[in-house]
Image (cartoon, rainbow, N blue to C red; front, side):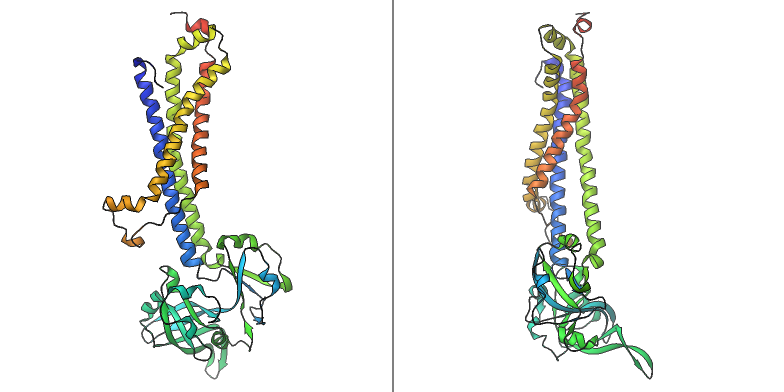
Length: 389
């Protein structure tokens, strides 16, 4: 890599391949960290407040017991089990109409939406008062504020009247609003579990099912495979939000693939640089062979030379990428980039194992790129290489 002055072009190509791998690893680490941040933000803002998993009977109703079933509380990754009544509903205000997901909850039980309430209080959702808490976006769409009345209609619990079959409906008073900063604010509606049961025409003591809180929403794929007692039915967030997170995962993979191609291009530069070095060093290789150097030793010399570009580039890129990821918002602020659309700053989550895999992948790719040129160098025949010297 630091040969005589006549090798300047091959050294330049070698330096460029090292720089290419550095830039590729840096970009890949930084972008993956930002994508991890967006994914984590979606998990917290959407899956953190929506029912992550619900256990119910095939008919969609269960009898509320004094305590949650032991078989549910003992499931792995499950941190809490609470009763829940839910249904899709239509909301009608004096000026607008919208649809949403009604959640009937126990005001005294743990409710993640309570951390995002900006007006009102979940504790005020006492039975018989028929009060609801809406997402801020949904309240804006319906043009309602705290104290206004909203009519809730549930088509799944219709009733027969002299005018025909009409959905179950009742007026509710807006108790408050919440703001999670996601599209959940356009959909979610909280009310008391007893009031929700009456709207759905449930019998006294009936609920939709038991709501499971898990350590990581993504473990529902594993939990869904576990057998359940009493012919219970499993449902989770994937039914409503699965496509969104699949799209995020696919976008993350595609970004990784496209940026990984940068590392691939830099690895091909290693091949071209090494081939030029092999062509220039044929005489030197031939002399070393006549002095007893074996083909394997020659092979290792060029592998080490080529791989050094990958190792230096991968380690430098990984270090610089980690530093850039941790200070990304400061760098963007210094460059004058405004990020008003994403809350003023980019979410960044740096995963050490992910960085290690990127660095190792770049080094392995660099090693593979050295195989062919090194084999060409090891196959040099001293007699032919020195014939015209």
